[in-house]
Image (cartoon, rainbow, N blue to C red; front, side, top):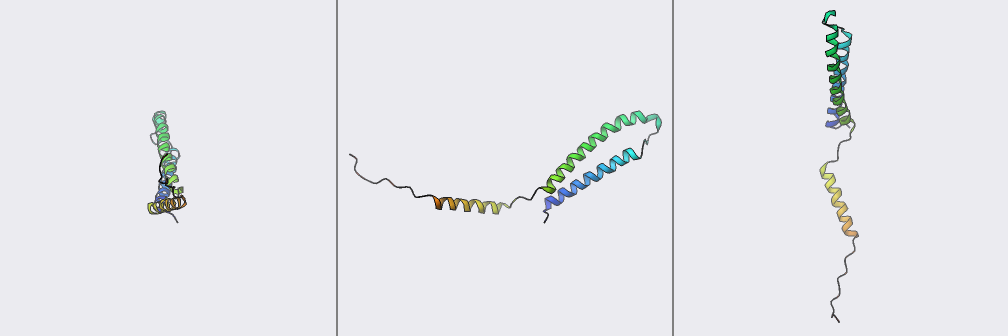
Amino acid sequence: MVSKDQGVGGVIFLICVAIAIGYTLGLFWLGDPLGSSWALAFWLIAIPVYLAFILILGIGAWIGWTMATTPPPKPIEDFETEVTKEETVETAEEEPEEKPKKGKKK
């Protein structure tokens, strides 16, 4: 069963990948929307912006993938129960300390 955090992570991953694919297709498939007179200036600005945008989307997709594939943590109540059980086992295994005998000193 998928936890809420894993579901959110999957959605984040899918959205980032879809936007990256759409942005890439839109930039390179539509060609030069400004005409041939601005072609070099357009690409000098478009390529760095494209790389930065894809990098940000890649980080978002990585975070989403990590959230989607990381198992949910144990509830705090279960952890506290385990710690209490371990403490009772440890105290039961300990031997009682011998008390010094009362006696006269020579």
